[in-house]
Image 1: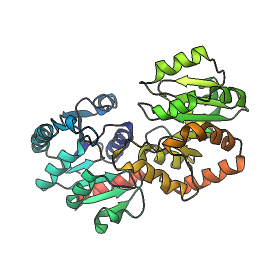
Image 2: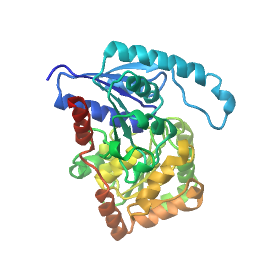
Image 3: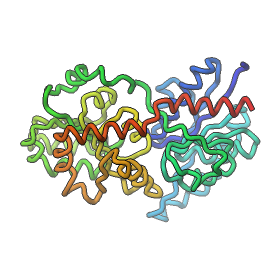
Image 4: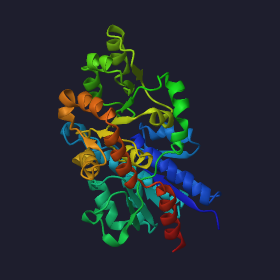
Length: 367
């Protein structure tokens, strides 16, 4: 095979970046001499994470559209026009065989320009509810890889391939890592563990929900691994310094997610598509608290898809204060329900998503 070239675009959050890196690594496994160029949004997380994983990235000045604060959109159109212009020069110069969009600001300009120039495009839609940009891009895309059923509501049926979402590297085989995980986090054996994660930046509601129930947590005997996120860490640390809680382990950011999942009996999490895919593949019993501040409220749709199949518990953002900790403590001590959730989660998992998406990309360029 000749030297193939791919552009992978998107990012903004870990939920978009990890799948993008998984696809890149999957392509490299199948085509070791492939050249891969990432395109991200300037100032976003991908500009650090992608080079750290060993790939080249170019940034576009694109920004999101603010629905709430209309005054913040003054620069939206100029930035979009500049991004389209830059995207065109990147595509022209790099000459990809296929352009792949994983969602996030940068995938819009790149996929639009590539399609206009007659280059095959693949859209990877992670959510159960497609956003505005992806609906538009879907009309011109060659193929659309999806992670949920009934996506023909948003896309042409003949272009849809059900693959699931790729999960990040290193999460395989966590069952064997339990002992290592207890040591790593300093946990006691024989006491249940609840893992609380609010995404890479943290989640204010989840953090306040935990913070308001420190007395209940202290007396429960249940161990908590609590990732606060960068923004909230100092505040929560000050709270715990004043109100020490021995069974609550405070972490700003968890580098070793494999070990965190290995230690956990129950996970409390936001309902981003990437996180849900990981929880499903690992069969993790979960309480999902959808973030209300995301476009088209897609996290609620993601969480509902699981809750309706009896695979997870859904608690709304508004209910966190009154219900979250109480429900979590009840659930983590109910072995039968934990095991039912685990089985149902696994049924919805797609462990071969990366391999299948790479297969679709290769079939596109072979045609």
